[in-house]
Image 1 (spheres, rainbow, N blue to C red):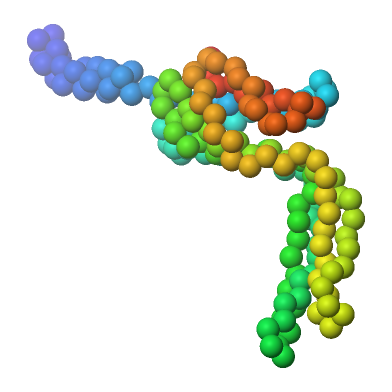
Image 2 (spheres, rainbow, N blue to C red; image 1 turned 120 degrees about the vertical axis):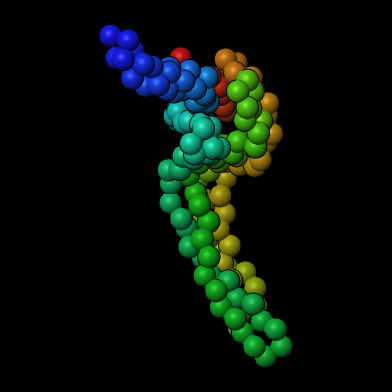
Length: 172
């Protein structure tokens, strides 16, 4: 019996050490709940892990809409250059975690809810370009601070819209 205890002691000690190390290094996952409202009605919602021990920081991105193409002409001297480009029209939310620790996060928030109004031409006759017109909400890089367990409304500058965020541990 004494030999058995001596033989198993290193295994038991190693197992206990691994268990203790695993218990101390519990990974923290910060989850962000997102809800966008227009005139009191929810038009978008989602949930994302914005920070964990394996991946690190990860943005929340949501996009629903279409790209509207247009042409641009530039003329320098006798040289004419044509290029195509596009403008996104629709609903988009992008939330970039700037700083995330176990108790709080600083987020950069961009929100767009636009619609296509039309396209018109401008410029000289021999080098005309197109311009895409849109209307609606377009907010870029609003910085907000949020604590773990807290819910906040992000100021969007338009009373028709409300963006609600909640940060919490993903295990809860």
